[in-house]
Image (cartoon, rainbow, N blue to C red; front, top):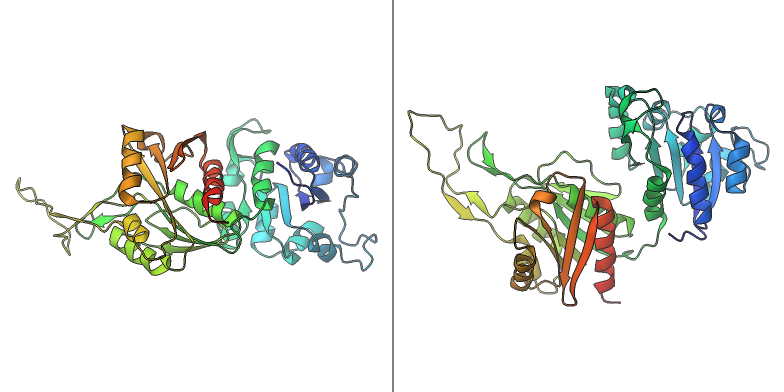
Length: 395
């Protein structure tokens, strides 16, 4: 990926995964990025500043009081011309500092004083990652708009196996490059739906489906990365809201319909990823149904409004993108759905190969034909989908 002219600050903290930061720095420099490296004292125990200077081609900073900065304010000056601060590896201690606003060295102070986005790539022992304190800190960082890259599961330097291993350099590079990349949707407003809906039968039971919401959340993230102002209307899911995305949580299909219609008039693009229930329970009970001597309660179903069709039928409708999750006859059903909804683009996949997974494969259908997006992680597919949408929007 071409990153010529992009300005990145790469921070290293003290963990064995610091050796991967050397390769990461090389990847950014090879792509044309201007990389300024800042290291903590502990990081210098694993990789030397000489190594990182040789790879970045720039002096490495480790000291808050470095006199090479004319006003002695390295924590201010080093980040002011940067487009992204990326800390890889980010230890549990460093995550705790940033989550709680602590600043006792150059890198943590710089992160507190920055004006650009911050991304961190956690790296630690599996038990440290799973510790409740670490998870609280990660949740707080996400809520504060910090992008968390990874971690992954696998072999660890301590000899144990589990979550906490830092992503490989190439994976971190791809994620950061997307954040630094062009903003083709700048000035556009994108509305996305995600997740399942839940249709109550009584006060404790309901009808739902196996959608995790991961694809819809990935689409919202990719649209935000492309510069759009994104609103995400999400059904019941515990997924964290992507950085920079406005979220409206709903439960039922009718709630989702109302939330979407209230926002669709101001949208340039609508992407209906949610797995919306076709029916709701017409005779929903306001109390828990009790089991009674072999008598099976009758559930009466009524049709839910079609969200995608409602938006597509609007006067001056946004550019509408539908999703179809089928179990068979993918091409036939997807093409029929696109024609019936009268939308310019539809993305289709097999439900049994997508629901709950972190990867997927999609086929896009438009007036030009079919476009196969081979299996990849959902965020990678979402970025490809956004790129295809951009190619179809009026110039």
